[in-house]
Image (cartoon, rainbow, N blue to C red):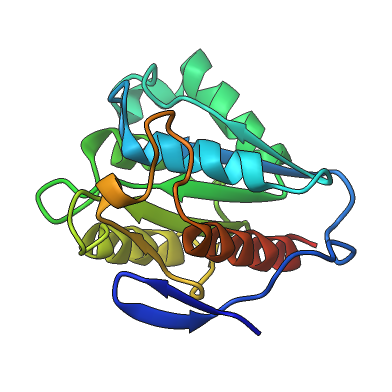
Length: 202
C-alpha cells in the first residue's frame, strides 16, 4: 500500500485501479465556499471531478446566487435555495471545499448551509455522506475552518467522513498554471477520498 505525504503528514492510501466497489451511476453534489473567480477551492473540486471514475458523476453547483437566509422567507422558499435543496436531496453524497476566513468558514458557505438545513424538519444534510476538503496558501490547509464545518455538519446529522483529512497547502505547490493538479501524491490522496466517499454512499 503506497504512502501519501501531504502537509507534513504521511498517510496510507488506496489505489483505485479497481473501481468495482463503486455504486453504479453515483451522483455527487459539490460546492465551494469561495466565490472568487480563481478560487483554489473551486480548482480542487474540478480536480476531484476530473479524477472521479466513470460511475461517479460530480456536479459542481454554485451557492453565490442564494439570498441571505431569513426565516421569514421560508413561507415562500426562494427558487435558488429550493433548487439547491432538490439537488442535494437527490444526491448520493456531498463534497464541500471550504476556504478559511478569519479562522472559520466563509459567510457564503454558512448561508448555504442554513438554507439547506431549513425549514425545520426538512434538513437536507441528514444521513448524507459528506466529504470536507480545503486548500489554503499556507500549510495549515484550512484545518480550523474544516473543524468548524465538521462540527456544524455533525449537528445536522450528516455522515461526515473523518479520514482521509484533506488539509491541502500551500496552494502554490498543488496546481499547475492550467489549474490542474501538479503532483501525484495529491492525486492519490484525492482518489483515496473519493473511494471512501463511494463506500459510504453505496
